[in-house]
Length: 194
Image (cartoon, rainbow, N blue to C red; front, side):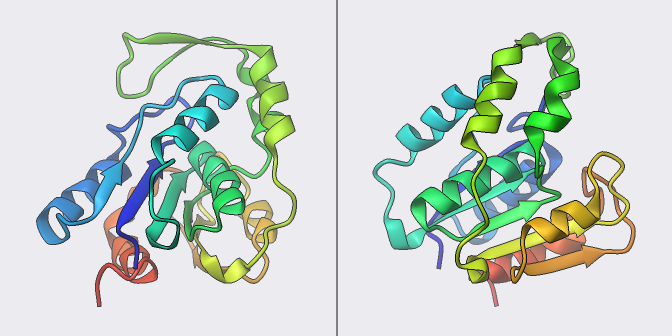
């Protein structure tokens, strides 16, 4: 059972993401004993990974888990492979170096459009350098993948996690607007509810 949860938001997103807020609210109400951390990730993948590692350095190895959405799903895979933690992936980015190369330049944050940040070409190289190989121990992965994702290809996401527990949705979307329907399955995978 997970006593420590790391939630990693997607590209241009934040801890204000709908899924992060729903999970945090559920934990506060039903499992206040669980340590929850959803940091604001910097645009630099190298700095984001450093923040994740430093922030979880003292966590109990057998009781921690990582969750990630989109680019956060890619980061969650990197963390799971490095730590051995269970991972929950929501429409995870498979090749963000390829997908985000077109976004180099000045961007705005989804939840705070007044906030601008610069996505540099070197960040694409950082993503390429940290891409993990094939997943090990697929039983520790649970992925929620939507065929209706308008950003990422569900076939590519599914193929990236062979042998993992996959909840493949016929419709839905990239943001998983129907997230409440999938929350119980995520909580059961993390052994946080019956």
